[in-house]
Image (tube, rainbow, N blue to C red):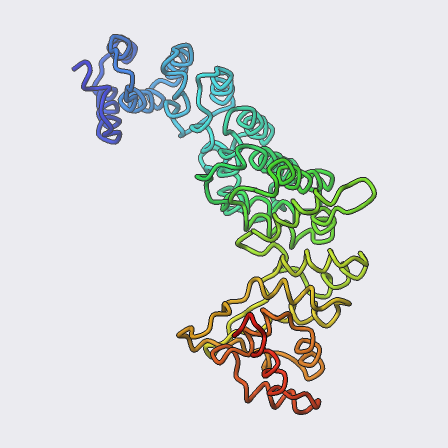
Amino acid sequence: MGEPLFSGIDVIFRKNFGKGLAYGSVELSKQWQNLYEQFNSISNLHKNTAVLAGFIEVVDTLDYPLAQKILDICASNFELKSCLVELHPVRAFSEIDMARCLDALEDPNTSPAAYNSILYRESYKSLPDHLLLNLSNKILSKPNGDEIVLEALSIKLANTGNSFNDLGGEWQRVGLNASILRIKRDSLTYNAPPDYNMENVINAALRFKDNESLKIEWIESIFSVVDENDGYLSDFDTTIQSTATLMPTIFLNHAFLINNDESLNAFSKRHYFVNRLETPPFDKIDASLLVKWCIGKNDNFAWILVADGIMPWIKNSSPAYKLSDTALKLLEASPSPKLVLECFANTSPLTPHMGDDTDERVDIALATSNTTIVKIYRMLPKKFTFILLNAYAVDRRKLNREMMSVNVSLNERAKTLYQHPEIN
């Protein structure tokens, strides 16, 4: 049949044809030779090897030694070498088969993408762990190999309860190394893939009690890229949040980075990085830990960094917003609540425009104690106060009741505000 056997994309049809050809052959070795010669005689750059794979699969069940000889021939062919994994029957993929495929991977023209299935599929689980680890490290040495390993590990983890407890520290090391390589590569590409696989791997790796120094190297790699790219990092928001949540103190210390050896310029880059992430990195860190860390730093910049790294506004059941518990704890503990409030104002769900046709309100009164109301109300920046006192932005009666209990007049404060030039 010639060229039609090895062209087109109908893999199932061609593989079944190859199987039938093997079952119907009187002499398997001669039939293979005919197939092989026809394959080599075609000049098509995009050959389909499904017929060969189907033929070899049947030969493997009928004459195993011959199948091994055929696979050795394929491994020496510059075209077939690149798809050697697909040509191997998975019925009994042996250590000999693995060695053959690893040798083929040494060829720079062999893509590692076909090898990721070996790392996670059940049909390869009988292989010794050291061979699979060796394969993963070889893949990591290839261009874009980090993404291939991360995808395979993400699937592997899903099959083991999203934990490295069963896989062990060596696989955790592979996952951390793959993540470090990936985050350092092409960090400014706009078409970067979602960080689903990396987040799965990092979430499991940081929970597993091993390779602690490599965990710190992972965090250092994040901020190394941030510094090099003036505060920009590609689409790894959920991975960053998981890292900050699972290693909060170390992450916060790296984000802050103000000491005798570092400049404010480095802090500004890292602060910008924290502030621009769509998934706030500190949102899932316990509020008491954030407050304790800020107090320990004894620096207003620490409060600003944390305030910019959370989402202070949460939606009420009614069409209103309120401050989150973490936001309130930061306000109550901060020695400079005005700075914290200014950070929150920059992320307000409402903007200060008169006449906005909206019925959503920032309902701060429902979320605070009387003491906090007074503190917040007295320290509000102009922009923030205006948002709260806008006719569409606050339930004045509820806020008035809170303020009256501590002898503060909302109406007097409002009159002063409405005389401000920015408002009139």
